[in-house]
Length: 167
Image (cartoon, rainbow, N blue to C red; front, top):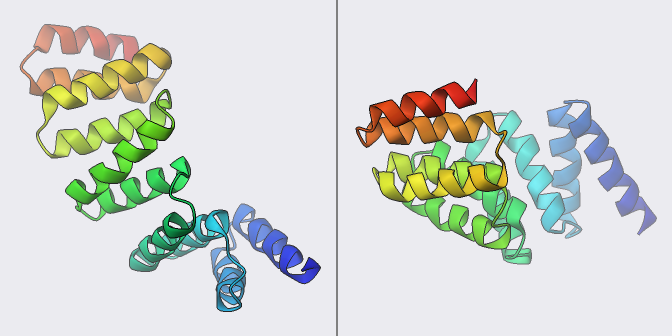
């Protein structure tokens, strides 16, 4: 067991040092012996992502999700990854789950709003950004995104005022 824990620590150190191939290799070894938990799969996904292995990154996040469905970070990671792959309907499912698990998390609300924007669901995106700003009033990204959705809704004067707050 201590060998597994040492390998996990080593993999995390490799990730922190941006040695993604080394981290990937260690997580692969851990996965092969059945020693990965949900957090390990999330980190394995991170190493895969930075190596440009996006399908594998999705696979490892899905494995982590199977182990721990109530992990908001894994839900967020799946939402983000799926949205970058243009799978916005699927991404929205995980973004909604992440926001349900951490309803005040500005980054999660911002991503959900961005996914809704890409689906042309502007009023729903507006609600996400407003809720995010209520909980994270200094967030540049949320103010900027709110300005974008107001602009998309044709509310130009309001969008300009919000953009000014973002600066």
